Image (cartoon, rainbow, N blue to C red; front, side):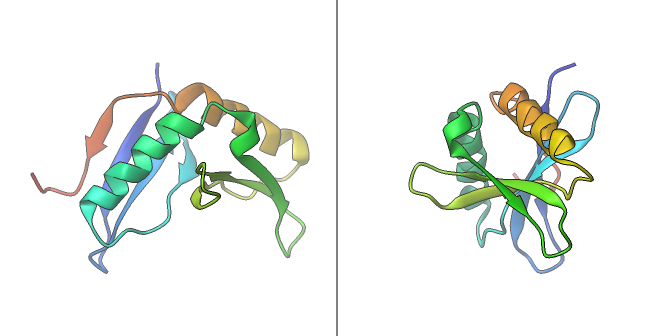
Length: 113
C-alpha cells in the first residue's frame, strides 16, 4: 500500500500534516501553519524535496536519540521524524520518507472544504 498525507487542524486552530507510510505509521510530522493553504504548501514541498537525500539532516536529541528533519530548498524545516532507538532505524525512516513522499493522496481531516 502506498503512503499518504493526513491534513489536520489542531485545537489551537493551526494546521499541520503527517506523512504516513503504507503500513499506517507516521513517518514525518510537519511544523504548524496558521492557514490551511500553508499546510497544503508544506505537503507540496515534501512531495518535491522528500525524495532527495540532500534535503535530510540527521540529528541527535538532547537524550541522545537519533532523528531527522526534512528541509525545503531554502533550508526551512518542513518536517521532523520521531525519535529513534538507533541510527539504523533513523536511516530506515529516511528511506521510508524518500519512498512515500511522492504520494498524492491527501486525507483531509480538518472537516473544512
